[in-house]
Image (cartoon, rainbow, N blue to C red; front, side):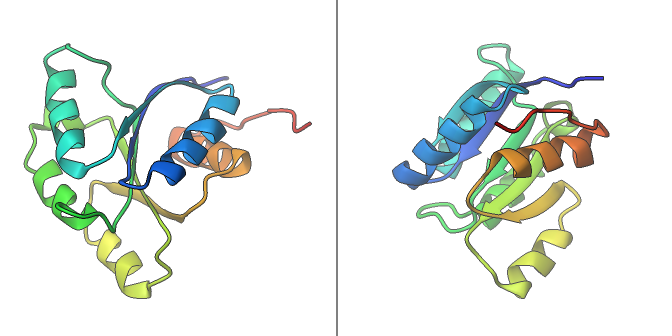
Length: 143
């Protein structure tokens, strides 16, 4: 059984990180479209637009914690206020450089957070996410 992730939303203010993560996701055959929001507010706007059918709804969100303006925790507060029809089938993954046990424990207090992982993304990490969150064993060849 294969699972294709139709749309990924990367939320991170760092241009270099977005460039790198987009390349890693692009190289993985299970992911189709990648949308980058360089701020949490833009990401919320994108989600509202997707609920109106104006753009593709993400299947997975990768959310950075430390961002100016609205950080990842503030995004989560707004995200949980969105209509459940928008959020109910989105996997939300905290993707961070934070090694803080406090940040990890805080992420556990949000039912909408499906995972907490450290940057950078890799093909193996994406394989594990698909297997874990979609109950699919990935038989991807590593070359």
